[in-house]
Image 1: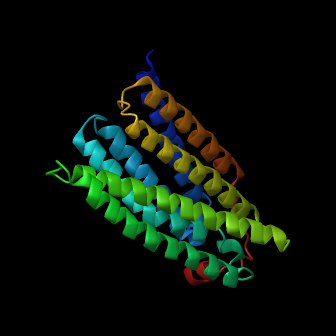
Image 2: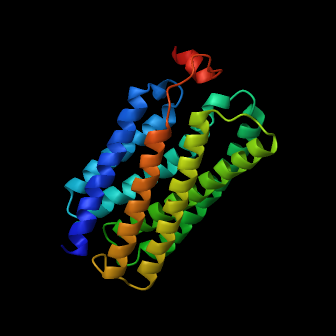
Amino acid sequence: MSLTQINHWTEYASAGIDLVLLLRVLGLRLQRAYVFLTLAAVLTVFFDGVQLWLPHESSEFARANSYSQIIFAVVFPLAAWDAFEEIATPIAALRRLAILRTLTSLVMITFFALLIALVTGLTDDPNGDNFLAILSLILWTGSATASLAFLWTMHRAIRAQKLETPNNTFVWMIFFELLLAGAVVGCFISLVEVALRQPASGPVVQVTDFVLNLYGIGVTIWCIIKLRALPKDLPSPSLHENS
């Protein structure tokens, strides 16, 4: 079996695991408190299906990938914010300050992403595909990095204040830290591959895709196993509003 075929089946396995995570969230009724995390899970399953359906070498696949990166650039900070919903009250001020810094960073990243995409993406690009690809990649990387910084800031603050961390808060926090770290590593690898002009079907790209897919599958399986139903006395404003 070739490496391309192995990657193909690994992508199916990854999509299946993402679907199991969504079903786990819905089965435990976690959407009552974790609205944006549920949205992230739904979008992940949707784009998994789209990208499995489209041929990898097609322009439609490239555009779908770019659109998904732009959408997830918005969803990443929302999901990171949502991870702390079960302890929203005791960390309210800290969480607002940390997310404000994250959003400020994202505004600056968006501005520079537009400039870079305009400068580098419009040359010999009548359909705007290069512009879209460069813009989405920069936004996605910047959002993943900023969201990871937000999670790490909250993680350190919670540990420094010795706050009791509910099971799901800990699981979501670690899950997204690991997932976003993998996303950032994957993006920088993609940038290096582009700089070295590595073909999408080349062995270097195939191996890195395989490793990152396995990494994502492992992290997601851990999250699925560790998630628990919400406690009945959850002091979450969003839960009370949705009850």
